Image 1 (cartoon, rainbow, N blue to C red):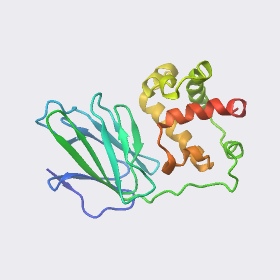
Image 2: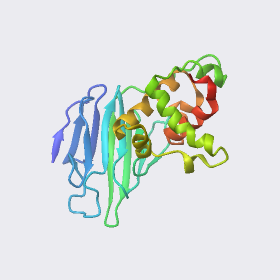
Image 3: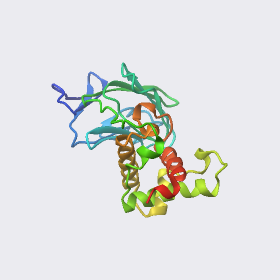
Length: 230
């Protein structure tokens, strides 16, 4: 169906379902995957979401988000030991690892899969010489909007310090509503903070180490830092 491929340039992303359904994205392009989306998959399956996956580029990194409301996908990096397999539940978003990855999901009617080839260069964590958490965290100075977001994440943890984080930390949609932002802006702000903390060398925010949604890690970070974040 789509043969817009050619040779991958550095930074491009190749999305493939089959030899007949494939598409190369430059960093300026974005697509949705689904039954009635830019990249059609499962067009005869009424259980497939019309829009299921959103793929886009942010500052040189490819990201993928599950924009459906029922189906969960799983991303499997192939040969990239810096990333572990990752579940992508409705609303979740994740970095697409450099190199080749597969993503699989199923409806009640069929199983589906895509192959993603990310021609970006793997960004190595820029670790600081010191391993002290407080010292590295001090290299991060949030903007006023970033501070708003961190405060909104930390508040329910301060109010319920003994609760399991995942039960009290607001979803991206709840954060957006509370802050009066769009969902996309909220996601982008989260990623900007994560990038800054990664560059500062904060261990929890090195991408190869992440096992927990970023908003949950940020809520714990903001709560623990307390008066240090100004």
